[in-house]
Picture 1 (cartoon, rainbow, N blue to C red):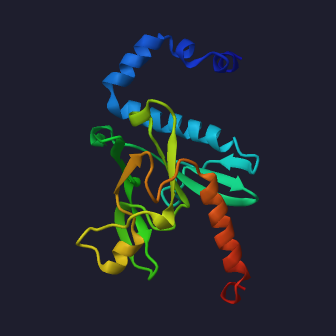
Picture 2 (cartoon, rainbow, N blue to C red; picture 1 turned 90 degrees about the vertical axis):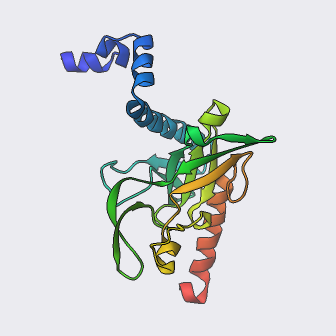
Length: 212
């Protein structure tokens, strides 16, 4: 009974802490702030996706499953797409004329084993090409609001790490990706045109002789 009553209270009352005290804790503990910020960004990304009537479901995989990437699984016109949600590195932001530039760290939080197309494995934090469908980058550090830019996985830059072979680099995403506001290719300020393009591409592939 006590546990059920506690769930009805907001987190400040549950933990007996003031809003300012929580703010100070977050300011003083960057790792805690970063973790919470990521989940808040996911929440706002969900709200943005719900604006489309074609989005019928939004779900989330287990955070601890290192084998499956994609923060949100979005069902758009009956097909599921994986969206990976990332944030800008605050210390990378600079202004060039009227354009704001910054970098986003596009990798896994921990080292893991990834399997390449030829069956070879690597122990890296790199994300694989094709491991998710769309990268969503929140621009809160630039705009001070919950605005996102989006790019298809297939259009993201690949790793340039010299110790990888050319074949390996072609299958591994760059761990640091430069983005801008206003967005420059391959990024856009909304995800729905990208989802439409991927639907069209997959439909064309399925109807072609090689896809049948």
